[in-house]
Image (cartoon, rainbow, N blue to C red; front, top):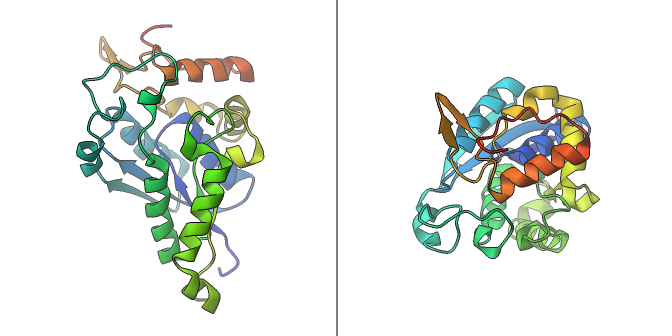
Amino acid sequence: MKDEKFAICIMSGGLDSLCATAYVKGYKKYRIKVITFSYGQRAKREILQSKRLAKILDFDEHRIVNINFMKELYGNSNVLTNTNLPIPSKFDNSIVVPVRNAVFITIATAWAFSVNADLIVYGAHSDDFSYPDCRPKFIESITNALNIGEEDKINSGVKRKISIWSPSLEGITKYELLKLGHEILGDTIFESWSCYSNGKKIHRDILHCGECESCINRKMAFTKAGIEDKTVYAKN
């Protein structure tokens, strides 16, 4: 139907992007196409979880885009793609993957313009402002730049102008986003993968490490939200 709204949601398989996608589908009433990126990250398990979640939640379409060549370009710049570097338990600049969200959003927007979707969604929230590409001024700037890139078709009515949305634009914190996701999805949120590592094998199970900055933030968010954390960690 012509009046249906379609969103392209960037979903890593992690908690934030899952809850943001659920929010846009459940509360903003968009039909959803999901895009997941394989960019050479050490946490390849998040891609596996994104497949499972897309199947469970029955989105209109799920694309996994291979940009693993980025791993070589990133070199020693960050710990998320370089397995030789230790993952910190607190935020520092080694966690920041250079303009990762800009790369993801640009590719997602190319798909949006191709299928006439008008919204791009990613999971940045207001606790993410340590990351420059999660801040509102970044979102506003890249939205403007990408629309300029297609302005002739937009002005002629051939294409829709795109908007980029993240929870950070509405001042939504991580724990508030988690609560929204849990209201919509229930215990499905525990299918998400937050760990910056590829997990730790305990007996036959692959578990969140429980020690990296992302695992610690996950634990804190469940505590603040007042939701029992059913995630199993290798280290509590």
